[in-house]
Length: 178
Image 1 (cartoon, rainbow, N blue to C red):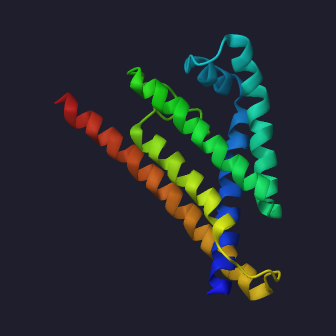
Image 2 (cartoon, rainbow, N blue to C red; image 1 turned 90 degrees about the vertical axis):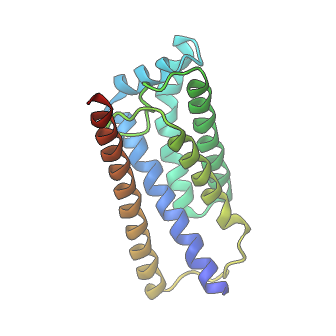
């Protein structure tokens, strides 16, 4: 059981590191779009929104690197940031502002309750490894291969889930037009 907990911890850390790294990369590549998304949330004045747009991608990079290195502080930071994202989205959903880009990645995505729930679940996933009693020994080559494969499968499932939700939303919007 100890080895399974260690493997689970490694997979969660790697999957979340990939999530944060890809989100940071998208924000760095599309700085103006991300600034526009941060401004559109209307939670901060323009100057602070600009500061967030500059600092946040680098914070996500640091969290990704910290998760890979296994730092507990990175797991807490990841959970805190994911909960902050969920709160910002929930506030805007509460204001009836569903047509905002979440600012999550490369492709625009409208705010939804699903995104709020996703971020809460991911925050729990970031913290879960901290509370599992895993082995203190470093993983061997076979365990690293299993962890890399499991992480790859998890990332593919995550991507497939997002694409499925986008397809469903598109088909729902067409069916309501008839």
